Length: 214
Image (cartoon, rainbow, N blue to C red):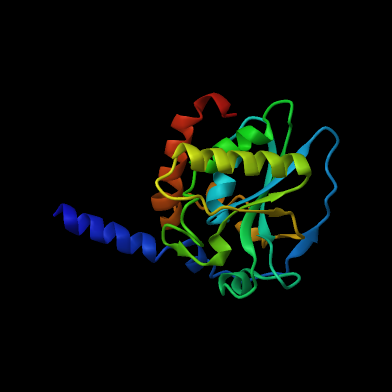
């Protein structure tokens, strides 16, 4: 009976992957400028489906906004359908605006490393493709140095059972994803993907980072 339950759960998750839930009509995406609000900083991170990234980082104290979008590809103004094809080279990412007086880039990366598997190339769970790659798009030399240092230290320490494959690259043009992707978990919490993928991730995250929550 337990084996049957596990099989059913696996099938359910595999048929409700992030890339298979975009059945709404796509609208044009737009690039976002690098303008940063006074006293704030920006981080751009990819860790699988952007619905998961958004749901996690929205709950951190010191994070002002989290915008789901696309970055790192070879065409302008990509749509969700185009990105899901895996042919554009874009990654699903979150653009995080935060107050460095409350939460540092190092702390954001701590959450980043612990809320996805940075050792699986171009996939997170049932979400498979280059659009789901683990990536840190740095905005300045300080972010690059911090990301490279901690990636190396984590590898040397054996924190993960396999080498980290997280890409660390200069931030390219960021395109805001379609409106229906924004605040996805908050607006669609009853959907299967939210219940079986995002909710368990959030529960683990809240326990591990209880002191950093809003």
